[in-house]
Length: 159
Image 1 (cartoon, one colour):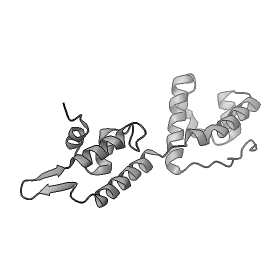
Image 2 (cartoon, one colour):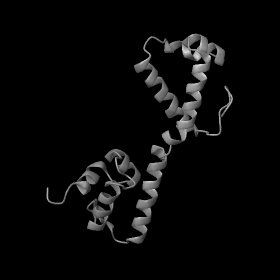
Image 3 (spheres, one colour):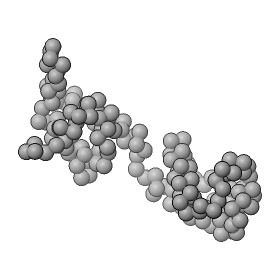
Image 4 (tube, one colour):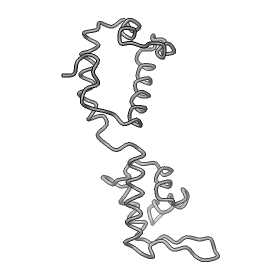
């Protein structure tokens, strides 16, 4: 078990650190509204933090250690940026292995997407797909498909 002030074996990437800090602030704002969060930036030491909050140090460190134990599970999945890059990579691989799946009509400014592309995208956002739960805007950014076009491609074919 880590010592009181040690970071422990699990380390967060800078992107995940920001997400974690934002989540903690949101949690505190909603569940500890009596704390003056504007003062937090002034607190420099663990002792100052404990005095500010007024918690029992032993209990605070016990909760901290339990939180550390659960961090790997909280951050088990990819970050949104990592997920977007993974979707982008799999889409590019799809296009490379399916020549003609996307065609630009010369002079008309029109891009044709084959049914193969439509099926690929539907599977991508479907249950268990890499982009499951991803917003249309994020998926559009990852695939470089305009949002309106992407929404059309994801719409059921009989509607």
